[in-house]
Amino acid sequence: MEKGFGLSHLFMTVFLYCFANFMVVPAITDVTMAALCPGKDECSLAIYLTGAQQAIIGLGSLVVMPLVGNLSDTYGRKVMLTVPMTLSIFPLVILAYRRTKYYFYAYYVFKTVISMASEGSVQFLALAYVADNVPEGKRAAVFGIMSGFSSSSFVFGNFSTRFLSTSATFQVAAAMSVIALFYMRVFLPESMMSSSNCTKSTEETVCLLEKAPSKKWNIFDTLPSIDDTICLLKTSPTFSKAAVVAFFINVGDVGLHASLMYYLKAQFHFNKNQFADLMIIAGMAGSISQLILMPILTPLMGEEKMLSLGLFFSFAHMILYSVAWAPWVPYAAAMISVLATFAIPCLRSIASKQTGPSEQGKAQGCITGICSFSNIVSPLAFSPLTALFLSDNAPFYYPGFSIMCSGLAAMVAFVQSVMIRPPPPPAKDSSCSSTAEPLV
Image (cartoon, helix red, strand yellow):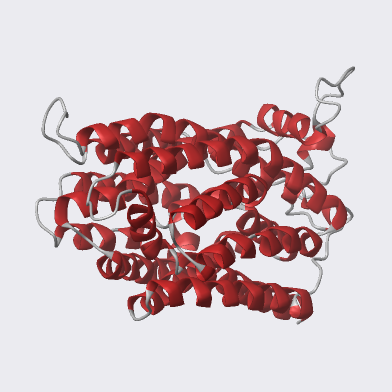
């Protein structure tokens, strides 16, 4: 019962935090364009600044996220959740106060520096919290439910933006960030982490870092979490394949989200309200998928097949965005995400099952760090493509060319996911001290 209450408070924390951060997404494009290129529907400077910001954030997160995961295994999930949730308030307060050019640059700098240390950390720490308290057999469904709460916050956040002015949007977002932080600190119990769980359950995965070959020397003495990441990748072939899938799907997702709003603004003159409508549709599709379909289909199909299904439809909806020939086509593409949203919860669950109970923070931090590396690669590749093909100097007419390339990255992830096989059933006497081979 205590664990159930803990998860309910975790879900509410994730909902409030994501609500605050998602509700500013439809407005930030208009704020950026108004600050950098007033009165224009196409702005190469905005595209390049957005890409540079994502690359810098990815570089910082690549180093920090595995370290945060490592620290959360030692000091607890709640303590580490407090840091990013506190830091995320400050950029919102800046734009809540004023959105002129110089305030935008102040927001840009604060957002970049803070996100280097916090981007994605709330999500993966929440996943590690779930893994601490949910058995392996139910983990994928609960991951999906948590993602469903995130998608629901996406819907409500964007729905709120639809009826608020730009200034009110950032003011409400800043207030909700503060509420989320206080709710988490007051109501969320600390996660019950114990390495002894590994010997109590016959169904838990072996502790991979304990089974990893002992190392005579350590290159990364000052950053032991990087060394743990390398050990995880070397010890479990399945974890390595999941890491490759995470890299390519995140390359595609970052490329899509970095390009899509500028593409729709240039191609169909979308504004804040139409962006919000589009995101509401996508969020509702994701909520239906993760709260209703995933708990039903995952036990029947298995996480590996659900992962491949989600990645295939991720590819399909990116391609449809790239060839949009009328304003209604992006809305149709957004509806396809009802199946595309299967991918991330299933991927995280597969990665979670490859490590023991005392290694969940390291595992989720490793996957998030790899996603952060893709945040470096993706903007470097897609920002110049987006700016080029939305300009008058494009080599051929295909405004959605960069989005099509994002879809190809999702297809690479799909092909790699097909190679992931479900693990063999564990032996009845398996434990952390067992001499059995690592799961693959």
